[in-house]
Image (cartoon, rainbow, N blue to C red; front, side, top):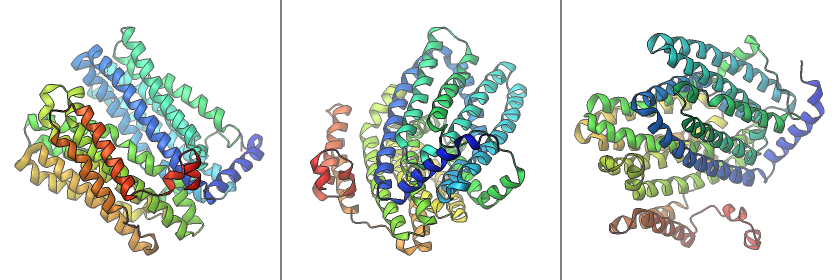
Length: 500
């Protein structure tokens, strides 16, 4: 097909390289370093976006900013419903398939995502026109063009993910965030109206797309293909996973809906702000666990359960440590976060945010086992666990909101996330008993959490100082008890890492 011939030789070499790294011991360190870079890049980008967000809210005002968020929410709905797990399954399939079939599948996937995104965009623009206003519809149309560019860029970046060139992926992701911040600030100072802000994703998407093409142009063909028959063969086995992704999308919002129905307006405000703060951090565990998905899938294809168990176990340990530290840090830093984002009026939401932090910590662990199920191709188990988690959370939140308001909703959400993590781990182990994780670091992590929470008693001390003390105590306890994967030392430079 058009575009295959010029890159045939280079593509073979690149495919061999990515297959080699997935088959060797270099894959683990590459995924760990890359996952760390992606998480670090996301955090830097999120911090930069705080500046543009504060300027944007003041520039647009309450009404216009509400319209801005509404437009972005409509476009995000298109993005979610046009994906429904296609990208994650695509990473799995590309990691498992031989080089000769790999990039033809990627081109089919690109054609499918473009088609679904275009159809969804037309529908959502029409909805915005009739339900809101022509001005909002124009902004939604611009944002949909930006979404289409992002979908294309994400597909082009698949060779970087499969080849574990995650440093390049992190650089692209960070550049998108920084460029969005820069363009937004420029429009604020230019005194722009609503619609131009919704078009920021177009120049950002073009720049990111060109940069990605420069990185992968000798690796794969870039033209999409459109074949209904091949799309049907690819999509049919993953329908349960798509349903699970849809359930997860609802799961993230069900608590807010229940609080709005069963709680007071004040409790809804407290819960909503704490949810928004946690929501900004939810991509972090997804980036960490998703970086190891190519290793999981490649191990399944090679029928190497020992390697798969090793990879799952190490990612589980890292995620357990990270999730526990995140939960402890949110409990310590909740008053400061609420002061920055919401001001003194939201100070009573600190306990709500602290409990939401537990839910985020549990999510760090549950996503590891969700990716394990995905790597094994257990789509129905993912669907069952997702629906079960949704029902359990809805029941708990509905029962606890009338009793304890926003705090009850946070408790129900946290319990749901913890149960989901345990259930997904159990599903993996029941299907593959040899993948049972070691719990050797659990006592050390529990001790680190207890010591990390000790600064809560230092009420006269500024919150930022308490955060520093908490992190130092947490890290010290991990080091003293050796409650960490020893491979982490190999990622450090210097002779000590070499001896480790």
